[in-house]
Length: 556
Image 1 (cartoon, helix red, strand yellow):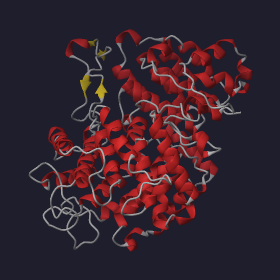
Image 2 (cartoon, helix red, strand yellow; image 1 turned 60 degrees about the vertical axis):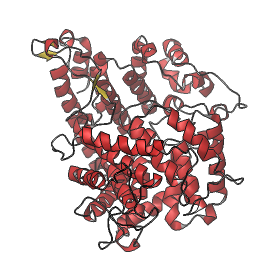
Image 3 (tube, rainbow, N blue to C red; image 1 turned 90 degrees about the vertical axis):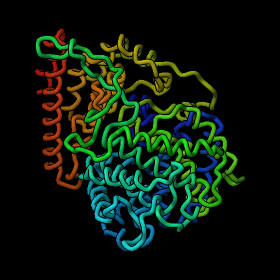
Image 4 (tube, rainbow, N blue to C red; image 1 turned 120 degrees about the horizontal axis):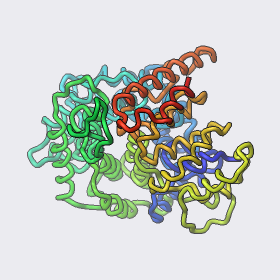
């Protein structure tokens, strides 16, 4: 029987794909015509798997995984295997021209599939290689003799971002220097050419849509790592909110700036956030001034949408761009379901799927506790029913079961009984149900406990911090990670106080005894770190709260 957390978040961004058929597991774009295009694209890839070149496997696997295809799918399995082997054997130095491209795609796949801790060693190896070949001006290229390449530099940034997301050692200077390279090599019109300072490549040095959006998106990645995501909010105390040496509840309306939200709190960046935002805005303005929802590129048409999605998501643009350009992308799908492009139909189709599935938004939502993907598509088939449209409710059904069920039989609830609680969107509805959700924390199923911590986190109720901190000491690592995500959301600390989200980092292949030891060390450090933070910032009226006493006594 599928656990409650699978029903709550399997079609969201908390975990990877579900087991079973690819169709049942697919995530929804929330736009039916885009869902249909993705389904046709997946069908093309999976029915032509014998035609996928070895160098394309990781990209295809990444696109399928982002769409919700299970990790057990043969293509996904092969993509992960190939990426790990390249990282383990240091193959990138021998690949030649595409060395940074391959490293970037492999890193994205390994960072975003399943439990990232399983691939920590490989991701660190990729990060080490990519940093070793970054040029003095902050760029990357196909060889030490060739000028910097905007496209390849984009993949260098993507590789390092992926590695950083799971706690690998990546220098803040690598992102800062890359941002400097892009900022210094912008054309006078606000866009970018392929190899700045030369006439080589598509466009002959002139700005192109593909390179402009690649550069803008790369600068936006650097901005996110150095200063926090654009538009992210925080709790910023005002001077008159201080009472007796502790902070009262502060307004969440101040935008993050300076060190707040940065992945590098001890690093002083050369590029300030305002200049980076300006460079991104000018790049996007260049594209919009030449608005064309159908890719205007003669070559690498689908690459345009892949770079557009990243730049738009990181720049926090209004939603209209997604459907406008998505409808343009639909016109490029052929009768077989493929999206042909210069590289190959496999590459083009994968990039199109990544656009429709809003790959970058998935990353940001997961890392910074944003919204969840809709679970509408494939919902009825998931529960063995004839497909039909159905309006999903909030947590009413789940809470009703919790309030009346025998706790010992909670795991035996049917999937039909919890089907209506898959999607919820109003945190206010959760706040009044906290007691019922706390009951679920006692459930024997780790997955069900994860559901409770996930839901408690979505309330945004700061007073629940001590309760959620208990999850940091749960015996299940998956529960630890979900509790940490919930704390990040409530505290508006997207960097999680510097704690890695991978309790077993570096010990994935160690003995069971060693793994337990490492996990327990992480749990102790995480709990103590968050408790120290909470004691400093808790509102005055909560200093003697029963929730804190429960956390202090029940957690140890």
